[in-house]
Length: 483
Image 1: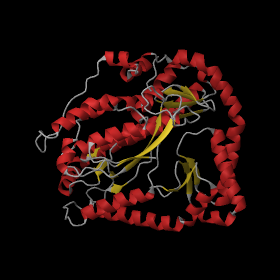
Image 2: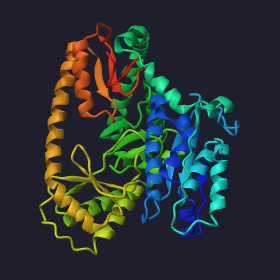
Image 3: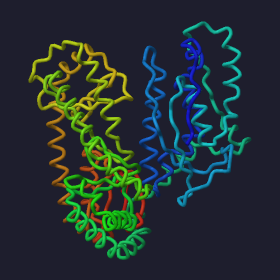
């Protein structure tokens, strides 16, 4: 695990080493080239992990560049890294998928150190930054305190010609340009999808049986998966849990009434679901079950904080939106709620007790100013100024209600059109990636019904951002497919 250190001794040094946003983007180009989700179209799990981690990295860098902002909290990120010529070290072993898994901790206090350590943690060369480092060292003695160092890096196309490195911008553009039409892609890939789907039928049935039996034996509310793993993988996870129940049935009685989520780490998530890490062994799962009473207590404390925050903010409800990607651990969620609650307590906000009822908000550590999401919930920074927060909530409450009404209308329309699309195209199933909005899904389904391709009949269709035939035969197509 790579740790991003490089703490600076004083604010003066921090500002002197603080690259601009343009500098950071240019310097990180080899990294973006190695992890960009556009290159992971055939690997949805790795793509989701990289998308989520890139958002958190970009948020961390943005916070470092904002004057007067408190330093962001350390953040653990995982990236799947493509093998490229830019690697400075080739000793790391590759996963079966052909990618390296790199886990690192962001905790540097300036942009330059963060950029350098991200590159080094991923075994990527920093030679292209030598001029920046030399110039920064030379200017350190003459630059006035408080002046941000700025030197934009412009890479000419000849740079890639002479170094042999691949131009990420050019390759991304080529990847987009060669995207096929839907009809052509279906013609080339429908036979493979049908073959894989037919072969997966026994695994699909086995998964249903195992899930039904375990829910009944353990008294669970549900069993879910954080990732879109294949059916064989899901079956092996349920079989492993079943073996543990056979060996130590008394250890699993405490799971009664819970929802289990198979994900990347063991613990409890912000929604109160029990997370079972798929890479953990039975011993680690058993240790988790022994701590479940403590997790329940922490979850109750989190609920109390939410209720009290709601009382202080006019009845608005604090929610957590589950997304595809790394789950939010309960400990981190509780810490965020507790920090925000402590900031509110000394203040006397003049919000009417019921003025914000029916509205919702999420708390985010990676934001610096409050904003209103397009579907109607408020996104509030944990360290938000309370007076600014009050003014923002009051001024945007009516707009938030309007957006929520529009969201409800769109979701109802989406549900209807999915049902029509299933029937008209004779699909086995039709679902979508969480990041595909109703605004994207609705026109996608309309166009599919207009296209009405017979090659889709009897298949499982998954709407995403890329083309792929999944390992169990599901057809994955982008929501904005070309006709």
